[in-house]
View 1 (cartoon, one colour):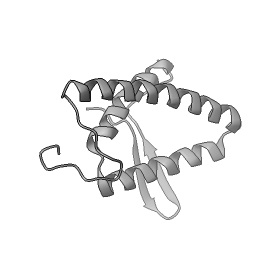
View 2 (cartoon, rainbow, N blue to C red):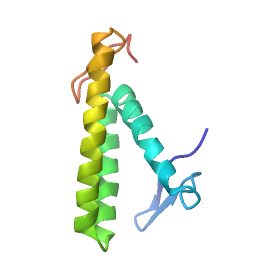
View 3 (cartoon, rainbow, N blue to C red):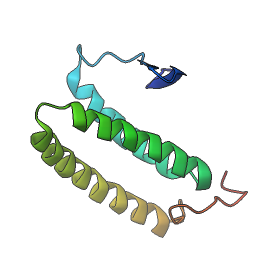
View 4 (cartoon, rainbow, N blue to C red):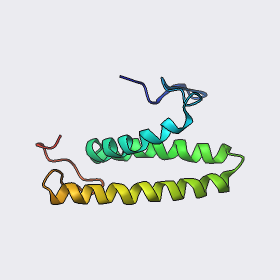
Length: 116
């Protein structure tokens, strides 16, 4: 097991971040995380958990953008990369649904007990 990202709030003025990953050695390996994370996020986050986890992820993204020296360039890169991954992911899910190996659950919905 690897710690991908840990964010802990110790007090109103202290938040600490930690990870077991080291992208300085293999910068491209971060791209390998994207499809894994997309699958995990789409398959395990439902209802209140989904809302809360995505809210924190978006707060991290906004903080990253606010601190960025090249915000516009980063936004363009994020837009292009996320669009390409999204298209590929939706095509994969459609193939899996058509093969009877997956079901689609609407965002914010609760998972059926037999899916959790």
